[in-house]
Image (cartoon, rainbow, N blue to C red; front, side):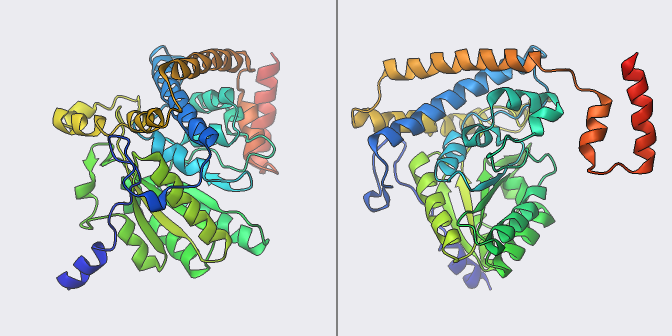
Length: 360
């Protein structure tokens, strides 16, 4: 039995294209991206890092509500989203707001989501996505259903969903993958293995050496990717998407990544369960530093260009938070009216009561 497990695990070696020094280590796997597309990827990662810094500051000022920091996971999040098309459907977890923004969700609505305002959960026309899922793993089964719906409608599109390493311990994770595999649905399951589910290390989540190998039980493709390498994540997702739209079934992608901040801003203290040595080890793998070195080596990026992105991000974030502030305050009747297509009798009574109160 042990030999069998080892044979399976040996098939899931980490896929990487550029190393920590920004050097190409897998030329054959290099994706066919233009210079402008490579620069756009860097633009998005820098912008998102600034967005994370400003969001943390806004949270501490009491101007945002729930917030899950994203610094360190930009390559995993944005490299995968960059491989999508407009018709593809995103089912995110609560840390995956950046993917929604680059898929078309206006920034001010992302801020409203953080505040718990209903308008933050209303996707604009043409933005194929659900609002971020708070329940761990629930988006996995939803993604299987959305993907099957796409297949039945003959759409050349995929449903992609995200969870963390802790999410793989949920029953929904296995149920969703198994369902998608059984029906060969065009789904992509991205597990962002940042090593800690809040404070629980991945070693205590599972005895498996990789999370990618969990694809074997569902009979689907699985791959482990260097989640700090934006090109590797892009290439793996692009391949998974091609498989999906060509009727070859779903794919599980494990991205090895790291969150530099706390799990959320709701009181988590990572110094209680992470060591300085571990933090320092992963800071050396920073996806922005790595990709910056790669682009500078090709003459495609400079400090001046990066500063322009930083200035742009700060201005747009300032404008977006102002627009969020200007939105009408949420009312109880808003929540009731948007909860059901047709209100049950008890809520009809409550609706009338609150309408009367709100009119005074």
